[in-house]
Picture 1 (cartoon, rainbow, N blue to C red):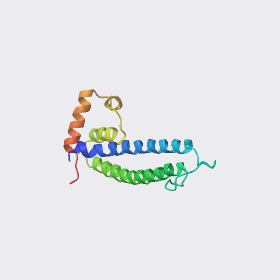
Picture 2: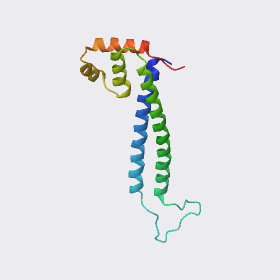
Picture 3: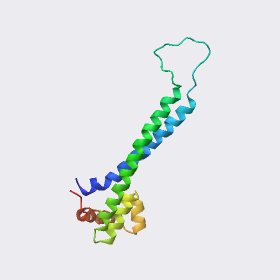
Picture 4: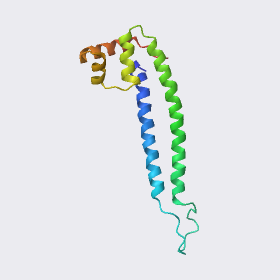
Length: 137
């Protein structure tokens, strides 16, 4: 695994967590809009589930929440590990740039502005940082 692939793991995992949280919102909205069971004397199939329709939505929410909790716990450990590895770099600019990019998720334009460097300089620092970054085995 390259340094860039390793560092991008946290960003990708964070994006995945946010997608799953939006999915929870979808199921919550759906659960509140699902109509209840009809009790108007209409015949029903004995094979038809007897649970109210919103129960499946609540089960799905619970399933996704457990998955998100696992992913968040892993993301915390991964970010701690990435931060510790960034601390191993000797160059302060390289440390700052990697944190801005891979921990804070800033764009290149934001990084250039915060570090007061040109695009070319930011990319040079980034390249050097990746070359020096201690990727775990």
